[in-house]
Length: 138
Image 1 (cartoon, one colour):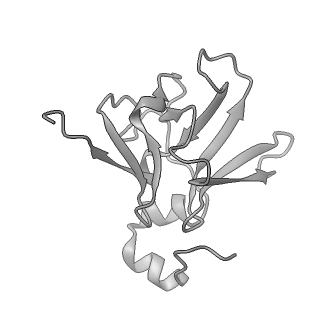
Image 2 (cartoon, rainbow, N blue to C red):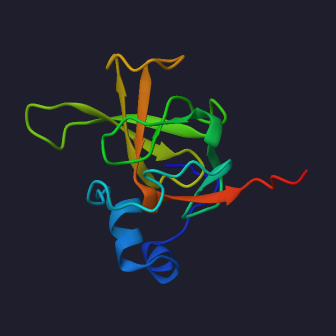
Image 3 (tube, rainbow, N blue to C red):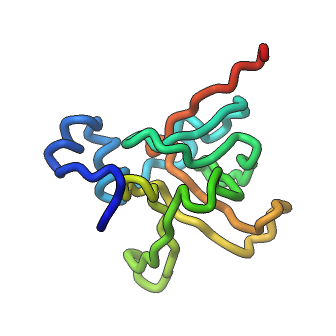
């Protein structure tokens, strides 16, 4: 695929920890309720941990109580891409990837009844993102 950030498997392995690589590059999932950003309320911007692209903003983060950080909308309509995921038999899902480097971020679910503007829940692995806190002084 033609991503703006395109690295070899060896380069990704050299830049990411083993767990980051497992989730970001092998579409793994971190355990629920253990991620760094599951309950974070800090104002700021969430970037892809692999390439640094802006993905989500804190104002779209909400408490879904699902065990992973949840957002109702990406920071930019082109920030993420979605693909059909049939890896779980009998449970089709929609995978969310970083549109800049193709790294796995999590999944998006629709129609769950959360009181959000989009009725979407981007269920994102904390290990796939990095928060850049916004300066509260300015």
